[in-house]
Image (tube, rainbow, N blue to C red):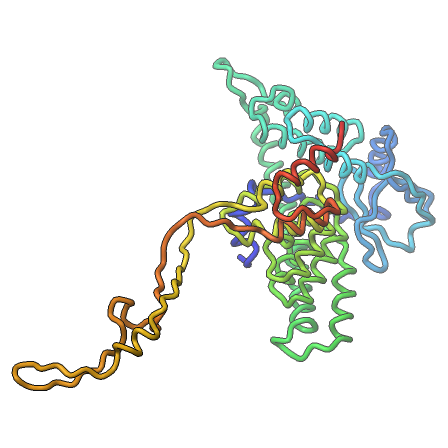
Length: 435
C-alpha cells in the first residue's frame, strides 16, 4: 500500500467504488451474422445513439471508441467492448454517445436511492444494462429496503416480509458464476499487463534510482504514458507513478486528467490533499475544479474536519485552487481555532548587576578554617539556565491562525479580510449565490 492509500482511509470518508469496463474481445468484423444482426436489432431500437461504424463489408453498428491501439480500435458497444480493425472500417459517423451522456448524468446524480433508481430507468431506455444494474445496486447501498430497486433486480418478499434473491436454477447460477470469474480474470489480466508496462516505462526512463534520467528519455516516457487512454490503465498509473519523483507525479496528474471516470477523480482527490509537493497538489486540485463534481466538495469538507492539521491546510488550499465558491462558509469556520497547547514562557530577570556585585569569590569560615567558594549561578533562577532568564513550560489555550484558509478565501472571493471571521461572514451573506 503506497503512502496515499495509507492516509486516505483516515481522511477521505467512505470508499469510492471502482467502475470496471466489461471487456468482450471478440472482433466485430469476424463475428457470426446472427450475433451481428442481434446486436444491430437491439441498438437500433434505442433513441440515443453512439458513433456509427460503417464497415467495408456493408455492415454498420453503434459504439464508442475507448482506445486507439494503432491498427485497431477498442470500441465499447452495449454488448461489451470489442476490437475493430481500422482497415475494415469504411467510415465513422459521429453521433451522441449514450455513455458520455450517462457519465454526465451520473456526475450530477443526487446521492439518494430514488435518484439512482431514476438514473437506472434512464439507462434501461438506452440499453445500458451494465450501468442500469450498477445504479440499482447503488440505490440499495443507500437504502437497503428501497422497494423499486429491489423489485427491478428481481427480489421478492418471503412470508416474513424479508427480501430474498430471485430464484434461479442451479445450472444458471453456476453458469453465471463461471462467466463472472472468466470476466474478472480477463480484466485482471489486462490490468496486470498495464502494471508491467508502466513499471518498465517508469523504472527505465523516469526513475533516477535505476539509471540516469535525461530530458529526452523523460519526455518520451511522458508521451507514452499520456497515450494510455484505456481506463483499465488507471490502477497501474496511480500505483507506480505516485511512488516516483515530483516530475513523475505531475505526469500522473496529466494522465488522470484524461479520464472522466470516478476512479481517476478519486486518485486526483487524494493527490490534491495528501501529496507532499505543493505543485502536484495544486495541479490535481485545478483538474478537480474543471470537473465540477459536487461529490468532490463533499469529500473536501470531510478533509477540513480532519484531526491532522496538514490535511486541513492542504484541503483548504485545494478548495482555493478549485475556486469552490460553495465552500466559503466551510473555510470561514476553519480560519482559526482555539485549542490547548504547550507554551514556552521566557521571563527576563534583570540580575546581571546583582550577580556582579554579590557573585564574586567568597570566603567562608568553616570548622575553624577559611574556605574559598565561587558561586556558579543564582540558585533561585534554576541550575543550567542563563543568568537573568527564567524559562517555564505551561499548558494554556492558544489561537491557531491558518494562512492557507485565508489565502483560499482570497483566491475564491478576490477580497482580503484577514482573519476577521465576521467580515468574511458578512461578505458571504451579501454575495452568496441566490437560488
